Amino acid sequence: MEQNPFSKFYLSAHIRQKREFLGLSSPDIAEALALDQDQYLHMENGELDFSLETLEKLAPILQLQEEDINDLLQFGNIAQANALALQFFEEDTE
Image (cartoon, rainbow, N blue to C red; front, side, top):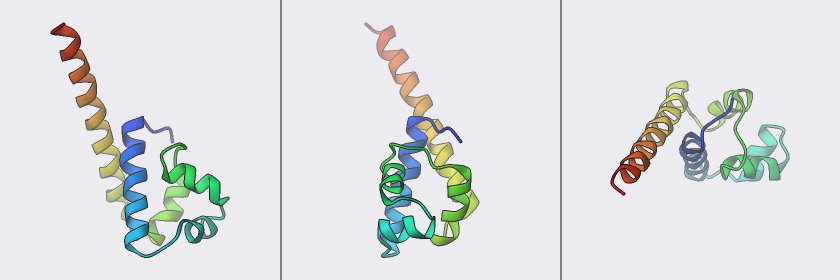
């Protein structure tokens, strides 16, 4: 699942915050997902996309509902639209 940069930011930041809130370490999550720790950290830092399969495995670990993930992706899409609108507005006023 390819994510735009804004969606990726919202999703990865929320996942990191949720993991920390639950007192889980990134190695704990990587092990539970059967991922290399570096690969997981790249996803959590927004450098790699979370695959749909990974999100489905991660949701119960972090107590995320499908709606939570959809909302985060939607917020990212709204942020992207706002950024594009602002860029257009700034170009138009130059």
